[in-house]
Amino acid sequence: MHLRSAALSDIGKLRRYNEDRLLRDETLHLYGVADGVGGLPGGAEAAQCAIECVHHAIHMADGEPDLAKITLDANKTVAQLGARLSPHYGIGSTLTYGLFRRGQLQLAHVGDSRCYVSLGGEFECITMDHSVENEARARIARGELVWVSEQHRNALTRCIGQTTPLQVDISFRPLTKGERYLFCSDGVTKLIRDPELAELLAAKAEPGKILRDIVDLANARGGLDNSTGVIVFVDDLA
Image 1 (cartoon, helix red, strand yellow):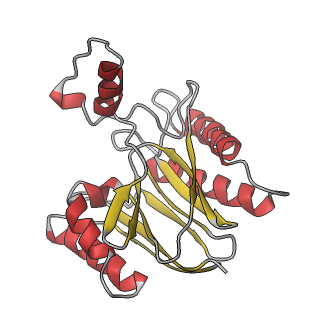
Image 2 (cartoon, one colour):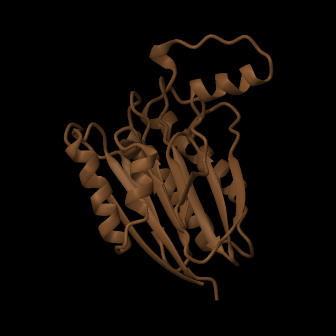
């Protein structure tokens, strides 16, 4: 399998620190992003710990890695770190990452970072934000009566580092030659609409140029948050 990739993280225009982290290991075919949870101390430490746990576990795996277990183990480690760094509040991070192997993508997802795929004019987000608003929609679809305040609709319902039981979204997707994947933090998606991302990701350019254009656009629109992305081109499955 032949992949091309690029990764970029930018502090943006307003934040004093970059609390985003990224995964890009072209030997393991492992890619993804983590975004320290805003409003909690230790966001950078949470994101860094999550990324390091995942990378180490997959590097050391004997056989096919179990991304659900690896992610739950990362959650436990980040929660333990949070108990030391911030005993009253804890620490947290999003985590969205994929392992490209044997002609398929195995994807693990917690939080509101995203993974998109583009092919032949089609563009799709293949993760769902774990937010109060989306959880409320799911409950309403089940016939429940739910009210969500505008102030809290984007608040996370899941993150790496939580001390309550964590549910990890795991999915498997067969790869197709020509597909392009984008993993990104919400510093990108809050400022660039999906149709614009679709156009940028489909451009006739190298992954690094496309990613630079995405981050530059987020910054041109105010750079309100850290912007981080990882792009993977599936050039061949042989």
